[in-house]
Structure formats: C-alpha cells, structure tokens
Image 1: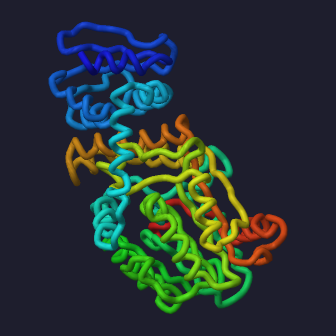
Image 2 (image 1 turned 120 degrees about the vertical axis):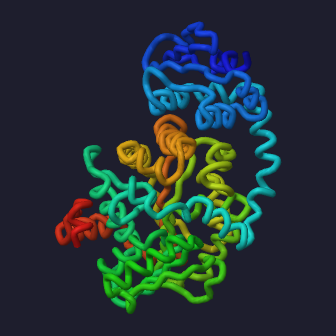
Image 3 (image 1 turned 60 degrees about the vertical axis):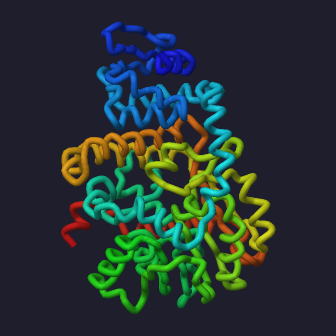
Length: 416
C-alpha cells in the first residue's frame, strides 16, 4: 500500500501507530516522542498520493480517509514536520515539486483581477469566522512576544507598537500609506499614536467594509481612509509606507514591480517598513496545500531573493530584524481559540472546512517551529541618513508608548 510505504519512508524520528482498514497494527518510527495513532478508513482513496504526497495526505484528512485516534492533529503535524526533510527526498515529492516549479511562473501572473480573486478566496470569508480566533483588533499577522506567556491581545498590541517605532513617527503631519490594510487595526493605531494621516488599501471587500465602519464609529474620518484599491493604482507620495502580511501574496515573479512601485510612492526622506513571512533556507515553492486551499498565488521569499531586487529598485536597506518563533506562538494561540470555537466554525461551514483549517493553522505553526520559516521586518529608505545612527529611537518609542497605553483585554476592548 502506497500510503504505508510513504509513512515508512518519512517517519524515522518519533512514533506513528498505524491501524489499517483490516485492523492490523504497525508501529512506524524509532519509538521516541511525539507519538500518535492513525486509522486508515478508505485506503482506496489514498492513491491521490501519486499526484502529490503533501496534497494526498492533507486532502485525506480533510475528507476523512484517515483519522487520528491517539493524539490530535497538532501531534501528528509536529511528527510530520520533524520528518518532512525525509519526505522531500522521496521521488514522488521531487516530481511534484518539479511540476510545481515549472508552473509557478504562470500561477504567479498577477494582474489586478486575479489579485482581487486570490484575496477574496481567503479574506472575504464569513466575518464571524475571524472573530472566533483573532484578537479584538483582528490582527491577522505575526504578533510580537516580549514574554512567551503573553496572551494574543498583549502580543498583537506589542506588534503594532514595534512597527510604529520602526516607522520613525518623529514629526507632525506625516502621510502614511498602509498597503494591505486588513481590517484597519494598524492604521487606526498609528493615527492614535502620532500626529499623522493614513491611507489604507485592501483588495478584500469584507475588510474594506469593516475598516470604514470602524473609523466612522471612532470619528476618525479626517485622519484615516480605507480604499478598495490595488496598491499599483496609487499615484500620490507618502512620508511613510507600511505593509504587513501582504507581500506573501505578491509572488516571486512580481517582486520587481512591487519594489519599483513602492520606491515611486515613497518621499525622498521617507521610511518604508515591510513585514513578511520568509525562509531561512534556500528558495523554494510554497506548500501545495497552502497554495491550493488557503492562499492561492502566495509565496514566501528568502533574503537572497529580496536583497538584489531591493538594491535594483533604488531603495536602501536600513534595518532587518528576523522574528523567530513569534509566528509559531501566534498560530498556537489562534489554533487554541479556533478549537475552543470549533462547533461555531462548523455551524458556519462544515466538518471538512474545520479539518482544512486545522491543517492550515497547525501546519503553519510547525513550519515556523521546524522548517525554517520566519518573519522579516525590513526597514527601507531612499537616503542613507533618513533614520538615526542607532536603534535607540525604536526602544525609546516603545517604552514611551508602553507607559502611555497598556494592552487591553478582549473584554475591555469589546466593552468600549
């Protein structure tokens, strides 16, 4: 049986107890933790592994072809991620990756209609869904943990503060552009933190709607606006540009276009802060499950892919910070909240959707724990003397902001 052979090839560290459709039990691996049990329910459908081992395994879980009995999806994906480097050497995986690389350029063709469609696939899901697992400000990107015990509200507040510090909001009247503005939380927090105006752009209809509802409720119409707009359509210039969690949707084939455009949008003495998922190892295609079911058209860069293109654009790299494990902790908290509200999610969608999102949230967490995924925060400018000589200004801003505004709990924010 192909599924069993693939597990034997892949699982070498840890223990997987496999129960086949005849009830026969077999232990795969070296017997050390982590350990879990899988029961094969519909073995005939696992032939999909021939097309792509990763898609075959994940789709098999989504469709109920195999079940987890001892342990849970987090235990299994922890085990799988620790052994993923073995799976990558399997001939089937190599063939699937070669086909994926061959078609990647076509898939990354990113005209404005396709960009809107890709965004809608994920971000225009039920608004209620995101309330069930995100923080009260709907920050849907890597949080920033000063303490591993931070809750999601605290860590997301710290993330916004950290980004604001790097934007160097040092004078009144700054014009800021937020590319990929989400549900508006970052832009709103910037207008409250400094004397500035913000324009946010998003391709998500649902995000655009809620963002503008928020600024009307808070009476911020004179300080901030959110447009349903592709960043490539913008013609104005800005003192500060920020982009958080949007660059992953640009695609490798379109990096030059992105940095040339942001160069043109940035004032001569401006600062641009880019926050994106990245890889620490060699360049490669994104996980096929994520591309097919979660983020169509997405990809993540290495620094070796980014820095030559940034240099060509005329932008200067003034600071790079690599956030390690911060996203793993963020995803862990999201998954815990998702599981706590799983029945509500199931009522919105169905069991298959719940299983798909379990694979998404936990699979991404394990990617950050075991497979060299990180978050890059790259600060860019046009002039070498735009930012101060040392990082002290960042720390001073964060200390002052922390003293002025303590993070709220979700209940407190909802009450307001």
